[in-house]
Length: 202
Ligand code: MN3
Image 1 (cartoon, rainbow, N blue to C red):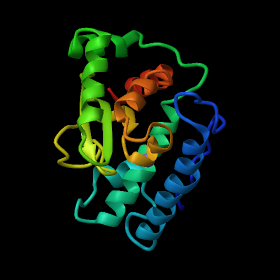
Image 2 (image 1 turned 90 degrees about the vertical axis):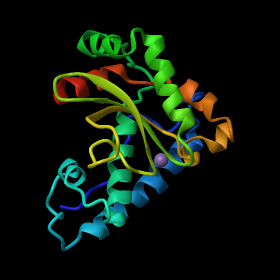
Image 3 (image 1 turned 90 degrees about the horizontal axis):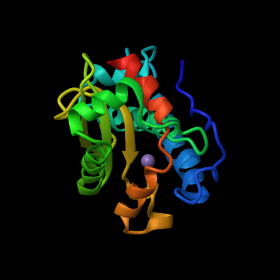
Image 4 (image 1 turned 45 degrees about the vertical axis):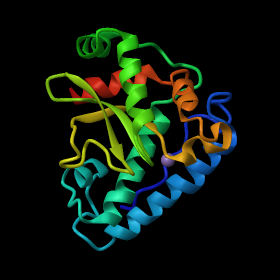
């Protein structure tokens, strides 16, 4: 079964003014589509062909750059679209809130750690909030299309929230102002989805 580009659950312009429609359209229909197509090409006829994307990434041979880059790109963007929502954003609550308070002391403490990880990622990459088995959360950052499911990336657990800090994610609207984009992202986080993923992965 080939992987398919996931459909967005909202319109390209739904995250305006925080993320502009043109960026969303190119990001989804070009960039994410490209990762999907190249992932399928990279696994066709191999032992990875019938595995889930999670299994492919957790068991990844990190020297397999085609699967690392495109499998990461496929998974990361699928997560990214889901953990944003223009309307029903919810708020940090329940067990995820408890875990965030334990790790960072306050919501502002979390926001500062997450924003710093995103802002200081040199070049292209992602910042994550991830959860370890047992329920503890941590913030970390990975380069390129790596993520915390992959082996030996320096931090671990299952990502439940992530921000894409590749320039293609923000440059049209924010140009070099990555911190403004990171700040804006907090307005579109879908906390209900993050909490759902936390419960599944803790
Ligand atoms: Mn991207």
